[in-house]
Image 1 (spheres, rainbow, N blue to C red):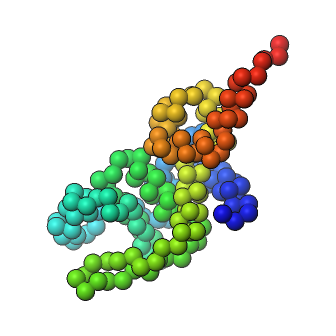
Image 2: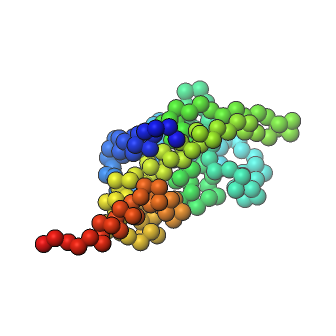
Image 3: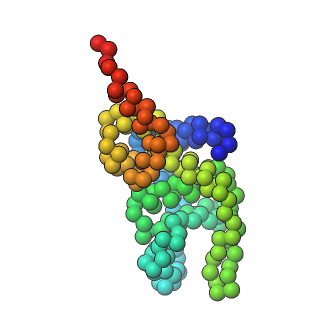
Length: 192
């Protein structure tokens, strides 16, 4: 990632949390962030006139083929999130889509197959990595993780506190170095 990007993400997460009236260790509601960004959020069930066979394909037969997508329709941004996924994954997927918008990433190219299927024909790894990092930082900022870790040390409890999966929480603990930092702080003898 480009130099300074991770620090920029921490600062940006703090700014958005402040705008939403949240502290660094509060749980972020991605739908509130979407409303703040003027992004409409739907689930497949909300799509008007979506054929039942398509709904079943997206949510029952092949729900692992997609997580979320953001469309630009005129002046409106619309994120559609896979309702078949666990709540923590839906929160992460929506925040990832919002991160793309915050980062002003251009849309991917989508083509229509001869059978009428939408095909994503471009995928920029750097943009995906940036959106992954920013979305994780929005959900679990380093400063908030440090604060919460002081009273909640069990990873599963921390994950529940932030409303993220255990995998994401553990990844943030590793990537931010908070676990090592806090272990050192707790192992030092206290001065009286």
